[in-house]
View 1: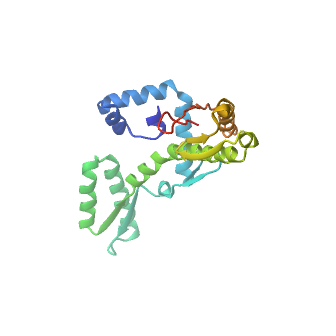
View 2 (view 1 turned 90 degrees about the horizontal axis):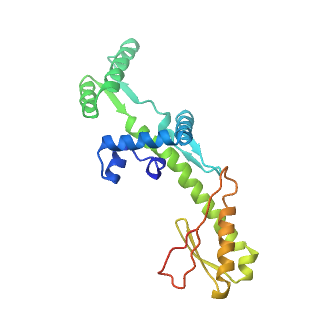
View 3 (view 1 turned 180 degrees about the horizontal axis):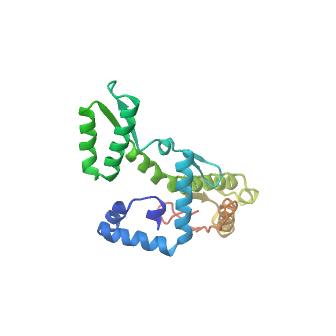
Length: 222
């Protein structure tokens, strides 16, 4: 599911799972069928981005994706083409390109170029931008939650009471040190602050906290 939410294509999913593209498609379709709300959400956010050229995260972080507002194909005609002929050839080439395989597209573009018609193919840019929509919301919102948690941990009076110090932040993990006698209390407070940082979401998140005596053992999962 993570691969799908992070907008990997079916081919990439197959490579990661070491299965054929056909099998990856079956897995993708099965996940979408099993989680219809997720499927609908992905469609909704992608449609919004295609219409507006941007997407907002849960905390207002905006990712601009202007490529989604581009036409699939742009045309530059030579001076010998009047307005009527431009409309005709534009429709003709768009029809050819929309039905062409990827390997055939460049042949069509080269053919047009020989006749003084430059075709700019934006479909690759648009596909890449579309794959970034859901990923931007998830990763961006996750980053916002971590920053809220960091700020809360640093300024929290209870953490200061136990002389707990925030010493590192790696991705979505925060490292805090304190006297061993206060480890349990600090761990509980750390969990509370991390979960509270995501309280604005329409669903609940959980947090794992691990107590270790040495930096190189275990993870500080917040």
